[in-house]
Length: 164
Image 1: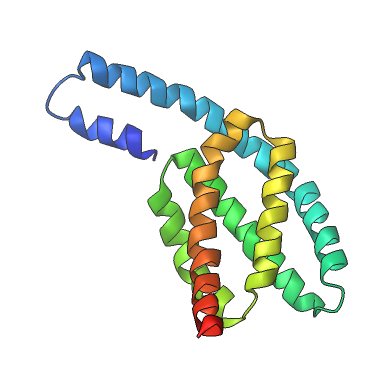
Image 2: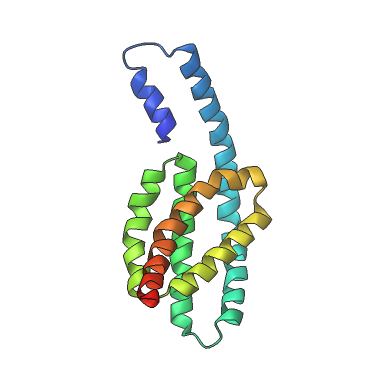
């Protein structure tokens, strides 16, 4: 359930919602409509979007093992599916618990950070082609959460080791 709805419903257990709470509920319902539309676009555009990324990946990493490239694509397909659901639910905790916690270790263990960064950048570029600026604003917090958790932590630690 959307966190904002859930909070309002719990608050209404012992009293009717105040005017400000009703406004918050109305705003949440309006954003849910927008979030549903974004979710539909992401679902319907997943194949063309990841086909675009795969083609760019093959051109940019021609000597890389194809299975590693496919694994990177699978990682980001999972990230997008969970990000889409977390965005729909307006629940960053759902996203963190469902995908980011287990995927971070996998990406770092397989030493695929450069491939993953490339996929993330192409994914962001592709999303900007299929989503409006307003839609990107609703999805972007989840993309940034994925970027920071999955990519920046590892690349910063590699920089420290290389710089020493």
